[in-house]
Length: 290
Image 1 (cartoon, rainbow, N blue to C red):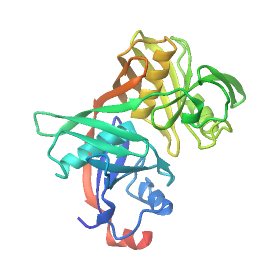
Image 2 (cartoon, rainbow, N blue to C red; image 1 turned 45 degrees about the vertical axis):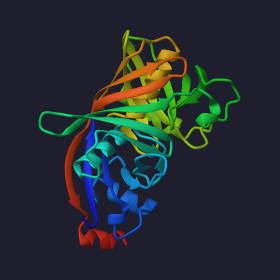
Image 3 (cartoon, rainbow, N blue to C red; image 1 turned 90 degrees about the vertical axis):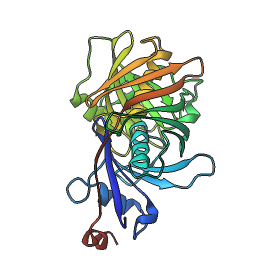
């Protein structure tokens, strides 16, 4: 379909998926911002653009609503997988996808209605090395490092799961508030320690195998859920001995199940995915984009 698109969400974290070959225009940061705008455009937390790959069955480019590009998105990958299945680009339930943050393997779960309503994604390995974020601190690992933001002296754990994350923990029974997320999130995203910016999670253990997180995404701001954020928080919590794997990571939008395996911190994410609608950008809107 000319100028066609697919919209889905993973626990309230919504993306538009499309094939750039179907568009009458090139995706530029300005046009991405216009399409993602919730008042003037189609509205989404980002765009998933089908791309060619010589390393995997499919490729995807992931764009944030501010027009910047993300290396990886856990919720985005589940949505992209459902897009591929729903639009009959594949009838397979197991396939690989190349992202800017590495290759992932996806296993779609088909429900009684024939819908790909959940997916398991092999998200790769977590690493705590500063060069993987990148981070300007000259330390061996970013485990409980000091940082100042919003007038507070805090400690964070830096972790990459193919994209960068800054995880802050509190003890069980001391939940973070949304006001704290809105104050800390933008400052930490743009902190001088992270020259390419970072995603932020405010996390607290709520059980032996569970966490609750609030999420500030690089280039998107506050989101209801995030697959890569859940993976990062789970890996950091296991690394610090705060929880044991497998970990249920709860966010405002719902829960994801993260398996953190071995000393290499291999990550598997399982969670739901929903299709919202498919449509096309109108000729008038496309003229405005041009």
